[in-house]
Image (cartoon, one colour):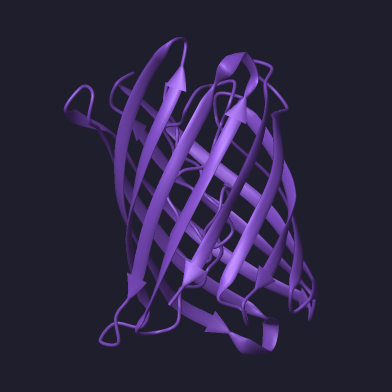
Length: 234
């Protein structure tokens, strides 16, 4: 079963690489190989390209390229698409994931912001829509260097003819303007839960992020993975 979970600054869509390697796919806002999204979009009139690779137990691997943009006409809406090439059990597969992310409210005094993301997964091998999702996003600024991101929503797995509740919770600690530490947990109602943690250096005057992430399944099929990638904004 292919699942898509996303990153801080991305969406928590579902349908992933495997139950043993719940690798994030699709990158919208700040992007990267994480599973929990934040309620924020890129600056109006800018674009970003995420590129990352994940390597897991039993020769599982995945490669993702995900551009996204925000126009000057709708600065609250981010549109993107991710292309993922994954290998598991001796077979390669490719999925294409278009998605939208909207930020529709904030309470500045409480440090709260709200958003909504939607995504669709098209399986190029089967030539059919494999699933889709709709996820609510909340970001809370606890203190200047720390933000908590909460996700909850619905996922349809058409291949298995199943509906799922999906969720995620992540923390971003901004040590300084050039370095962040990120940790998160995420899962679905079948009891499959994953964990990821890593660090994100930012270089070239804030235009490029680098991600180095370790992840593992907490429940369900055992599995570990490592992801590395970059996000470029222009």
